[in-house]
Length: 367
Image (cartoon, rainbow, N blue to C red; front, side, top):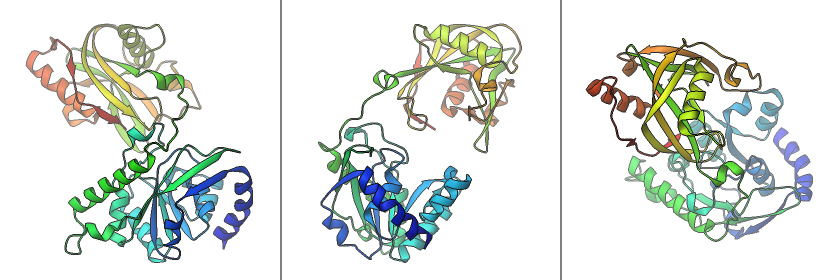
């Protein structure tokens, strides 16, 4: 009842403020009153709630688990029959999704797992939606929007042909290969719908040029300088560093960041590792991370007056700069892990005389 009241209250203002035009909506009508999954590209935070209101049928959608931790948002999204997505509760997510599908409801999923700031050529989805579809034996209908929903602006929604998930079962059983093939087909179908349909968003300044992050590797008496982090119920270590400011060189940035974050004065002298990263979570744009070997000059690691330690609005968890015994870091969660692995390998070969020239490591997604 609460869900119906909320949708009824929201429906009229929604139709007046957000204008939508459906293309091939008849495909949705075929599954009226039947269980179905809608897989949609994620353009902004309004996508899920507004689409559920616009479709006007018993429906649920996946939403970030953090939104269920606050008072009003928890009440609102629970009333909208949302299903929280939490990294440590994957089985609960699958179970809750199967439950609503068995009740002949619709499930809305953004399979990219993040908001998409790119246009059609960069679409890449996760296979969680394929797993749920195979377990429940329900079809998936791809839906794409041409641009983010905004007030008093027309947004077009294009509906593709339903994909029968049962075709990807092997002897009636779900397999890893079947999940991958269904996910690949869904990504292909959404890609085809987006091609020539999506409008490129206006880019911000940091999106026009690749972002560059400089990090310092400071080793002194067989000890490595690192920052102990506790964030999102995780405990790990990172190399000190940050984004290069306008007019700075890589060496300037590494020296500044090491000093600001740890209080240690170090002189960068050699770029050691470099890799390309895709930063979707923090929305700072894709770019390079470069690691420079730094010669220790003076100081001991301590908390400073940098914004990481003093800004009350910053939600980055806790920071604590420390020296780590380099022979013990193999057992520690030092991130990125592949940089730690390469550093240990090189250090054991040459000690403090680390290798040259520059090593380019494999591209990764920044988590």
